[in-house]
Amino acid sequence: MLLNGVRTAALARSQRAGKDETECVMTVSLRESVQLVSDPRNLDASVEEVFQLMLGVDCKRECSPPVHEAESVTAVVGFGGVLSGACVFRSGARAALRVAALMTGMEFNGIDDTVMDAIGEIGNMLAGAWKGKVPNLAANCGLSVPAVISGRDYNLHVQAPEFQLHHVYRFEDASFEVTIICDGLQ
Image (cartoon, rainbow, N blue to C red):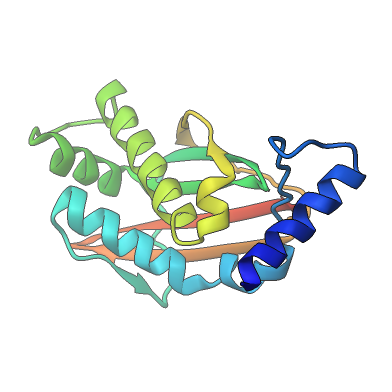
């Protein structure tokens, strides 16, 4: 049987490398599947899925640039493992307040800790949904706790990523940006 031959060859290689049969080391690489990892359809599907399932709203990618408001909220969730980088969710105050309202069933007059927690959780869900679209990434990449920043006049700077996906999305009358930044692939 072919599988027995594959298993025998793998065991022979591991024994030559000084490993016994109970130690099985598997090297996982995303280099061969970078097109799948960087496929913008995975990001679109993740955003649509999270907003539909968690907030009950339809969300679609926009072709126009986002409307910038004076105050914004940004959630950053780091990736670690076979891919290092981050998922960044950035919205103006209006979209952040609406996301928090849809998540909690409460209305908000301004950005407070609950709104920032809601934005952090959306960032976390988007990062998890996106990495779940690629099996090797899902199994071999962890997520950090979300870091949430709010305020006026700030920029998030990333040095020379390997690849970056950046899209603007709209739901109801609110828009937001989601960026996947990959600064390293194994």
